[in-house]
Every structure is written in structure tokens, then in C-alpha cells.
Amino acid sequence: MRAVVLVGGEGTRLRPLTFETPKPLLPVANQVFLDRQLGWLAAHGVDEVGLSLGYLPSAFIDHYPEGTFTDPAGRTVQLHYAQEPTPLGTAGAVRFAAEQLGVRERFVVCNGDVLTGLDLGALLAFHEARHAEATIHLAAVEEPSRFGVVPTDERGRVLAFVEKPAPGTEPTRWINAGTYVLEPSVLERIAPERPVSIEFDTFPGMLETGGALYARPSDAYWIDVGALAEYLQAHADLLAGRLGTPPAPGAREVSPGVWVQGPGPAPAGVAAPALVGERHQIDPSADVVGSVLGAGVQVGAHATVVDAVLHDRVTIGPDATVRASIVGAGAVVGARATVEAGSIVGPHVTVDAGTTLTGERRPPADSPAARA
Ligand code: GTP
Image (cartoon, helix red, strand yellow):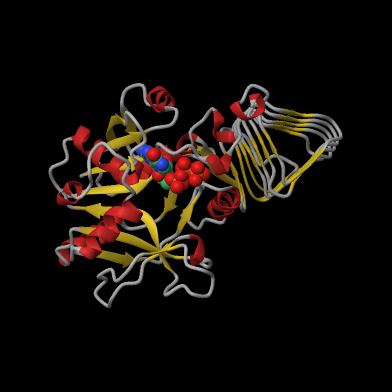
């Protein structure tokens, strides 16, 4: 089975982390997110993937130098790179990547920022049973007004697409969750060489022309990790075991709810739930809880790290505090500094001793934003 994964977006909502690393290559619970997604696809029988590239394409080629991905169970996915000459929108990108991949049979499409426990086999079986031309995975969310809402009839035939309805007017809580099963005929519905959106153009166009467009609701875990609050929530959910355990491949539960990568016992100063990467140095007087710490992270004496995500090689100085925030790889939070309330510290940035960042984003000095 073949799949196209859309990974070409700029990831503006996770800046400054995405200035040098495209969103799908950021870690989620210490595993590159796209590795996680390719593992999920491989577990459902996908063995060939077209990566639809746009923004920072060489980062993907560097991450998969052999052009393959092998999951911890030994399943290998062959990768093909499709780099759009100009941005083609979601549908244009799918058509371009599918052509590069030589797709002539049913295939799967997914957004490169969706973390889900969806049973892809069940979605394929649903599609097959209804002789659908396209089938959309639907997830239920609390705030459907932020999404594309998709009402269906009892058999799952799509009745309408309601993009970002005003709060209180949503016809249903079921939203387009960004995973599709498509017949190759859908590609003929997408005009070549100009931007076309699958959500705004292709699927609504199928409705108008009576195409067999279906959608299947699923209660499986689902979250779009592309924004700060959801990125943090995905970590909390992985720590809580909502996608199964361990939260990262190879992690060991060294005491209830405390997961460690690499050798050694539960580090003093860390309380459940938590995931701590290898080669950590955590002062026993620190207070780390509800957090994911990458490889080589150092946490100083009496520092506090709560509901936070620290990428690899982050240093937290003595008496510093990080709460509900993300700290990018190699960054330093100085002694007594506070990073809180949905802040993002960019990679290699130093937050000066004693400084407070509240809901702030700190880009690296050499980033496009800082230069502007
Ligand atoms: P934001 O800028 O934060 O909205 O993120 P984004 O650029 O990733 O946009 P969004 O989350 O809406 O994109 C959904 C999916 O489509 C992601 O997997 C993106 O990588 C992908 N995507 C968005 N735009 C393009 C594009 O022009 N080309 C390709 N190939 N993929 C895209």
C-alpha cells in the first residue's frame, strides 16, 4: 500500500522551533514526529510513502539519507521525495506527489502533523464496503469551530463541508481529521500546476458533482500537534499512555509513570509522569514533573520544570523555572530565569539569568524573524 504524507508546510504556529527544523521533524516525546507517523503507517501495511516537500526540503533528505525508514519492529518503508516547483496547496501537492510515486491504485493521504491511533485498516474496509471514491477520517473535538466540520448521513456519505463554523452553529462535532483513502480517479479532479486545496476545492467539488465521498467517524486518539497548546497536550497524552506505552520506543518505566531512555535508575528530582532522555544530568534538588526531557538535558539545583517539553541538550540553570512551555534544542535557561505560560524558546537561544518570559517566543538571533 502506498501513501502520500504532506510535510511541506512552514509550521508558522510553532515558530521559532520551525525556522530551522520543519514541523514533521521536530521531536514528539523524544521521537522525530515523522518517524512516529511512518511507524504508524508501516504498522498498517504501508510500505511506500511519497513525502510531499515544500519548506526546508533538504532537512528530510538529510534525515533519511538512505531514502528508507525502518520502524523498531523491523518494517521498512521506501521513501520518495516530491518537491513542488511552487506551492500547490494540499490537493495540488497530493497530485504532484502521487504522480511522482506512480500511483495507479487506491492510496492513503495524511497530513504530516497528525498524531493518531486510528485503525487505518478499518478506514480502508469502510471505504471498500461503500465503493467510495474518497473517504475521510473524522475525529470528534471539543471546539469544532476551529476546524472543517463534516456532517454525514447514516451510511457515512458526506452531506456538506462547513469550514470553521461560528461557535454554537456547528452541525456536528466531527471534523476532517486529515487522513484520507483515495481512489486514483480523485487525482483527475485536481487541476495540475496551480494551487488547489483538498478541503476547499476538491472535496466540495466532489459533493457538487455527486462523487462518492464518504467519511468515517472514529473515537481513536487524535490530535494535530501543529500548535503550542496541542503540542504540549500530545506530550501529556503520551505520558498518560493514551496511545499505549512506552511513550517513546525503548523507554523503560523505572518507577510508576517515570520513563527513562538509556541505562540507569529513576533520577532523583523527577516525579511522574515524566520521560527523561539518555545522558541526562538532573540535580536531585530539582523538581521535574509532567514533562519530557530530551537527550543530554541538564537541570540545575532547585530548578522547577512542570508540564514542559525540553528538547535535546537543553540546560536549565539553578533556581530557574519552566512551566507549560517548550525549550528548543541546545537552548540555555539561565539561573533564576522563568519561562512560563506557553512560551517557546528557540534552539540555541540563551535566556539570560533572572529574565521572565510569559507567553513569549524567543527566536535565535540568526533566524529570519530576528533579522527582519
Ligand atoms: P501553520 O503555518 O502553523 O498553519 O502550519 P502548516 O504550514 O504546516 O499548515 P497546516 O498545519 O495547515 O498544514 C497541514 C499539513 O499540510 C501539514 O502536514 C503541512 O506540512 C502540509 N502543508 C501545508 N501547506 C503545504 C504545501 O503548500 N505543500 C505541501 N507539500 N504540504 C503542505
